[in-house]
Length: 232
Image (tube, rainbow, N blue to C red; front, top):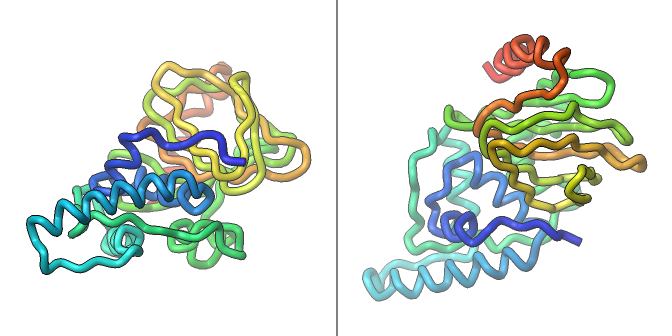
């Protein structure tokens, strides 16, 4: 069961089309797993539609307008500019598709996750950067091997993680498929995947993380260079 959700500001900005692309992708992915947040976004969108009708009574909309516009932003290589639907109607999406990936992730990895350019870091972690033409944040798919753990690290900026498959835990709790987890600058943790299956996550980073281990700190320039080369 999904336990961690976007806050009201995330959902309000998403329903209005004002959320930067990398963050909007994460919210859209979460919505495919979470009926509670889909309902909340739809209520916000219905309210926006009513307000818009008072101003522009001739404008019509469908319940897929928000999701379709997000797909158009991805196709257009949006650089983060604000786009407001008319009226503001969010995507009313179904539960995750039979392939197990939210539609927005399928759009970004049209050949499947295996088609992405993966970089291996140690025995347990591999990362595939996703280019969304937004310079303010890094977007990627993380794959943590079952039972494996990421290096302990501190966040330099906001990180959004949406679990697409499996689960992981850290000192603060356990997170499962569909959870929308936000970390802020100064927070430190070490995600560890459960033993039964690999953990696959969609991640949006405001700033690169700072590893706690001296060895990983020495490797940090190489890691950033490698990820940058994959995303070019």
